[in-house]
Amino acid sequence: MKLERCLFVVAAVLAVCASSARAQELGPHFRKIKDGIYVQSAREVNSTSSIILTEEGVVIIDTGQTPIDSREVMEAVRKLTRLPVRLVINTEVHPDHTTGNFVFAPPALVINAEGAVEAMRKAFDPERGNALAKESAEMRDAVQGYRLVTPHIEYHDTTTVHVGERTFELLHFKNVHSEADTAVWLPNERVLFAASVAIPNSLNNLRPFVSIPDMLAAIKTMKSLNPEIVVPGHGSFGTTKIFDDSQRYYELLLERVGVMVREGKSLEQIKRELRMPEYAGWSYQERMPTNIEAAYRAAKGN
Image 1 (cartoon, helix red, strand yellow):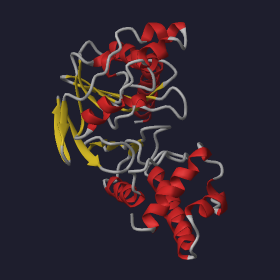
Image 2 (cartoon, helix red, strand yellow):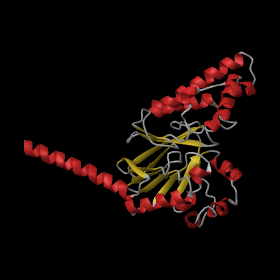
Image 3 (cartoon, rainbow, N blue to C red):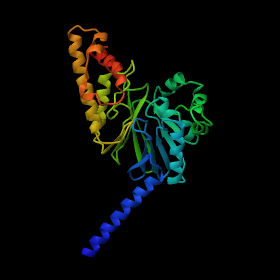
């Protein structure tokens, strides 16, 4: 009995070591979070890109901060499997999540929520490729072949996609970050790719159309799924604590701005006077004005 137990422990240790070694072979920017699921984040504040292996091919969620990251993801795919990339899911429309679409499509199909194609075409800078190429020799090589690749498929509110043995539930959230935001839920694996609604330890850039009440509703919806692992659009993967932290921040921001609005203070006064010392250590403090503007809109009922 003791021998059997020893052999079991040894086997378990070897399995863990083999798994870690396989992830390390992909490079220092990759982490294995579940069997056949890998996340790349080159730097703490970078957009994340994820690889999901299936029996019928590969699914990529977002295509990297830059074409260098996109090429790195493709190299990792080639180390992991001979199967092609079947599907790319964009969780938003911004270039730090979508520029690398050209690396994978074709043959992959690209999908995001409705409004993504129009927003990407409207924001497209035809000089982006040339500008990137000037950054470094490595970037010049990585950007070769660059072109705008918008989603081939748009969906409305929710949709379910089956690739091989895996199920992907896509959830469209409006007014939470970009013109088209998609969270990706893998119910069997209990992994949630949460887009950029909640970013760990970081202030978000709240554009004029973004609604904090809608953000809070999206956070509550995603939290209700009870995921084991949450992969945000930026930063390190973790647990639902990512949602808890963001929810507390936005609720406190709404509360403090609301009090100042009821005192008759103007937006400019609030921007000068409001303090959020509990979050002074969060990244992107320069985004606080847009956060206050969003809270002010909510307080005024706009």
